[in-house]
Amino acid sequence: MSQTSKLLKRIASSEEYRALEAAVKSIDPQAVFNSYTQISKLMEEAEVEVLEKMNNLPRRDKEPDLQKFRSAFDSRSRTMLPQWYGIEAEFKKRKIMSGKVSGMGSKGDPLVKTPEGRVVVITGATLKEGEKVRFIVVSEGEKIDFGRVFELTPDTFYSILTQDKRDEVRNSLSSIRVKVDGYLRKRGENQASELSQLLKELEDFREFASQLTGEEKERNLAWVATQRKRLLRVSMAKLVFDFLSKQEEKEIEKLCQGDQQQIAKAMSAPGLLRYQAHLALKTQLLAGEKPKGYSEIVDKLQQDMGSMDSALKLIDFEAKIDEVYPAARRYLERVDRFFQRLAQKANQIADSLSESKEYEIQHVIEEAFSGQVLSAELREVFRKPDEFFSLRRALAELRAKLGETESIPAEAALEPYLRQTLNVALRT
Image (cartoon, rainbow, N blue to C red):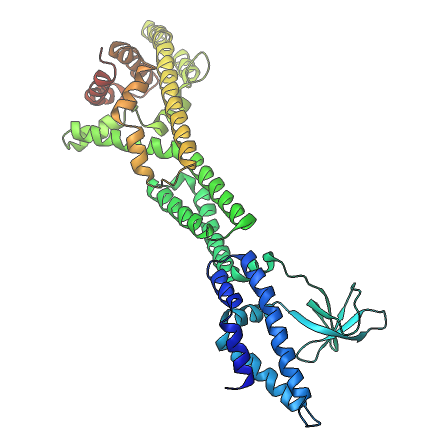
């Protein structure tokens, strides 16, 4: 066995090298730093030992032997000291090197030669000729390079040990950020399944980023928490209202026993749980002391007034609007309050979920907005079924008076569903 192999085998079997292997495996930067420092001394001592023996050789030109030793040392350390060699290879990639000061530049800066023979000016350092220094090359020129003194710390080894993992985390973060931004841009089209999938990917990324340590880990985990809360906050109320609307449609279809004409008629009436239809109706009807469209109809009746019959029509219209509009308005305000309570509950659920790892959103919504929950919320805004239906009739009559002639038969088609729901919710 050659002298080089013997020296490397001795280091490979040392307690220091075994500690380095364990530290690298467990990604312990401080332990790697400690072991690397100790092994560096062993490597220097081994090199000195070989060089001393070479100096005692009778040959005048020892340079070929020296080059042969360095080549063998580098080649065999790759296989005999793989953890050490891997760290050294990373240092080379980052242009972190060691060398002895060979002289001084014109401005007094120390000069060091790299293993490849390049001259590096170590700026801003006070070093003596022959002194060993670790440095990093910061810029390369045609003839000379420039560097600065580099001090190894546990953070240096953390960066090396986690480089591949951090690259993977960075790529994963970039990918999921695109998905989050895309989801938020088209939030009006989002489904619970899309949100669930995105939350699952965020959770997978959280577990992935947890393999890092320190500030980098905390920064990534904080980003996940922020995005999870943001996604849930902007989505939950809409997803809840979409769920309730679909539930109502299913109940209507069931009660209509598949009669498509009856289903269409019932669906044309203002729903109880269809939030978007409620908003559209509010926008269509409410306008201060009189409903929208009131003035136009009065103006037309006045222009057409040429007989007692026309005058009676105008009087009847004004009287009926005065009678039903306040009640219809109260109905819409009560339903508004109902949806506000549901939205508030949805936001509370979003906030609680933002701190958890749950991503099965559809299941959460179904549990949180069960029939019992909806009944409790309806009891907060309507006292008895009779009160509810009195206000609903006023709304249907208002719409009929404003020209929606199908509102009364549509209301009649929807009434079985409404009575079933309200009798359960408001039973005493």
